[in-house]
Image (cartoon, rainbow, N blue to C red; front, side, top):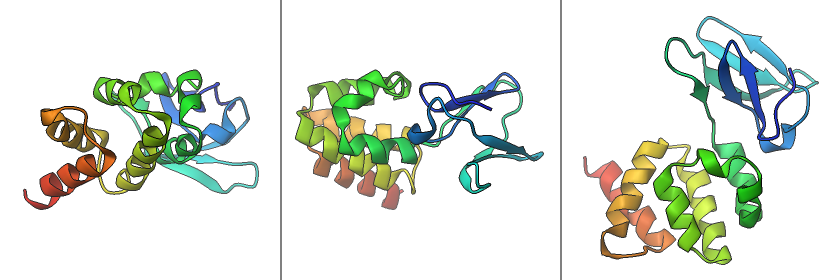
Length: 149
């Protein structure tokens, strides 16, 4: 299958992410009853998704995107990925300077291995209670919320 400009593939009316480096390129797809694997030309797994059924329409594995965007944060607005970020994160990133955006994307890439975007958005809300938070304040709010439940 060929990934679109955002690196997403369309399979059975569902969307599955690949990686930004595979945007507009052909990838292989391995479909199991519970999992969809996206493979490169050498049959190496790029990313694994739970297979979507029912009303679920998109599976997005953010880590490959966030690592790349951390290097060039201004490029995200032109990638098609920016619109898929939760509204709170879009608003926060608009208020950040470029250096702060780089750190924010690095933090997101790091924390996405341990949490969902819902958890990270809740940490952002907590940290934003007193105004525009620093990346470190968001990280502290995430840890407080995650480990004090």
